[in-house]
Length: 172
Image 1: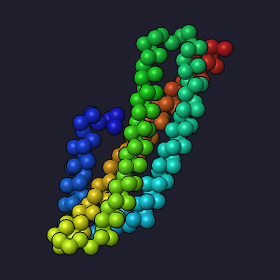
Image 2: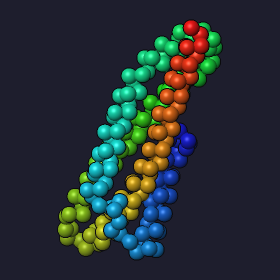
Image 3: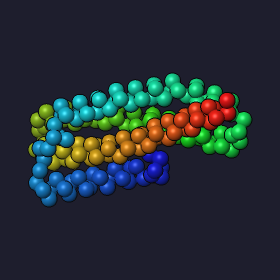
Image 4: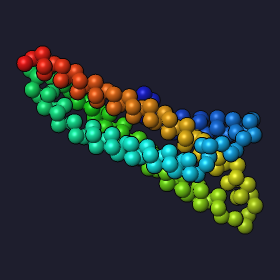
C-alpha cells in the first residue's frame, strides 16, 4: 500500500487481527454480516470483478497517457519521469489489491471448509470456532483499506490523464 511503508501492511494486518479479536470478545458477538460466508464471497467476488475491469480500463488509457506525455514539449524530463513513476505505482497498487482480494477469496473458502469439518481433537474445533470470525473481520477491515488505496491510485492516474488532455488542448 502506497500510503503505508512496505513493512507496515503485515503489522497493520496483525493489529487489525488483535483489534478484531478484542472487539469480538468484548462485545461477545460472532455472527455479524461480515462473517456470513455468502456475504464475504459476494463482496470479494464483486471487488475482484471491479478491479479486473478497472485494471483493464487503466491499461486501455495508458497508451493515450504515454502519447500525450511524449507529445507535450512543455513538460521537462523530470516531470515526465515523475508522471510515469506515479502511473507505475498506481498499476502496482491495483495489481497488489487484486492479488489481496484473490488470496482473501481463497482464504475465506478454506476457512469455511475448516468450519465444516468436525475434528477429533476438541481443542482444534474450539480454536476454529473462536478465530474464524476474527480472521473474517480482519480480512474484511483490511480490504476496506486496500480499496481506499486502489481508489487513490486510480484517481492519480486519471488526474494525470486529465492534466495532459488540458495541456494538449492549450498547446493546439
